[in-house]
Length: 102
Image 1 (cartoon, rainbow, N blue to C red):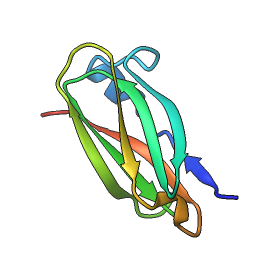
Image 2 (image 1 turned 30 degrees about the vertical axis):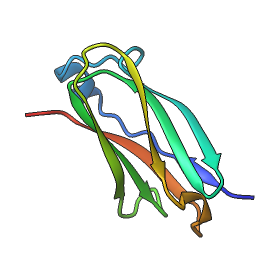
Image 3 (image 1 turned 90 degrees about the vertical axis):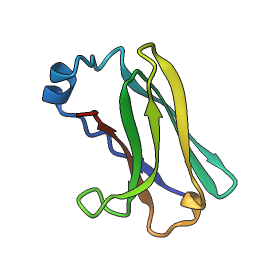
Image 4 (image 1 turned 45 degrees about the vertical axis):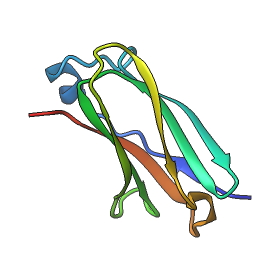
């Protein structure tokens, strides 16, 4: 059995400062295994850069799996795939980091 963890890290100040609302503008909607890969799917609005990160430890070092730039001001669904992510030992944790444009 493979284990996948999800760590959702959000700062209320980021949501309020940049006009995000936790209920409407960002939501992880699915985590799925595709053979040896892990796909994380989420709904979001832009303009923002969303970076999927993975770590073997929640308090350890987080590494970028890939990023998606969303320019649309409307809610859209997007995803990133961690190639080979389901084969890693120990289990991996995932988070989506929101990088707000300056």
